[in-house]
Image 1 (cartoon, rainbow, N blue to C red):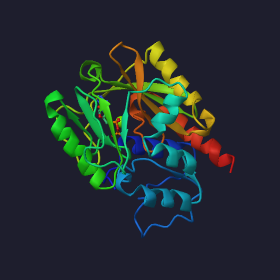
Image 2: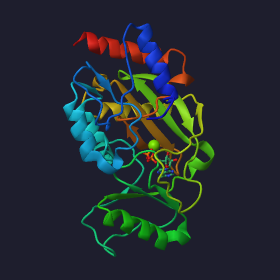
Image 3: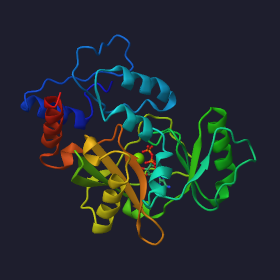
Image 4: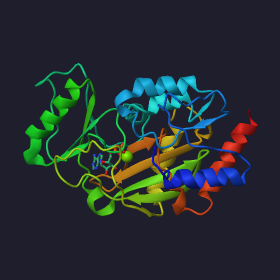
Length: 279
Ligand SMILES: Nc1ncnc2c1ncn2[C@@H]1O[C@H](COP(=O)(O)OP(=O)(O)O)[C@@H](O)[C@H]1O
Ligand SMILES: [Mg+2]
């Protein structure tokens, strides 16, 4: 566990206390921790599940009640959900999917600047960018992930990220709360981090109308009513024609940057209180 917790968690716990709710941080994979005594588990900074997703999902299913819900977490912890959203008409970053049953030489990589990432990943782990001269290195990266039993996704590197960053739009209880700008994370070609998270450059941003529209379309395309989600973060980048594209929909363990919006922690605490009231 982070010794002093993440800023989000410190703020949320304080806001819950103000709402009269006792909350404490617990570590999901700590075998000495019991769960039977809790009324509700809210998943937060579990950035270490990607290499043992099955164990994580089993843990989610075994606690008394978890938010977001187990079906949401199951769907969202595998980035192939992007295919579902694309099929539903949401503009997404074009993606080549390389399944674990692919073999060396079996798959074609797009040309140009590339990003390689595991289909099950968070915190930029094992995610790397390659320039056009790095095709061979990109292929080695893909093959190494496949050998490790991990399905892979390959995308064009969206160059607007370098100057404009990505826009993260945070929703609480299905309602828009605030937006942030996240600076580019993949700066050095070919360097894949194996840290649990990357140091991020986050600043407040007001979401443009076309970004809001894509975020709304994303939440409307889900297999669940958006109100079922305690929290959501929609991450968008602008493609070559300038239109926003979905990079990621975070329904599992997103940082919500509660400190960047007055009242956001209190609203999240209130949403949790209401759900507890619904028993
Ligand atoms: N296709 C892409 N083009 C440009 N940058 C990308 C691309 N895919 C990922 N990145 C960068 O890598 C980071 C992590 O990738 P992301 O898809 O958000 O997965 P996760 O946050 O779950 O690790 C992004 O925040 C972004 O900075
Ligand atoms: Mg991300």
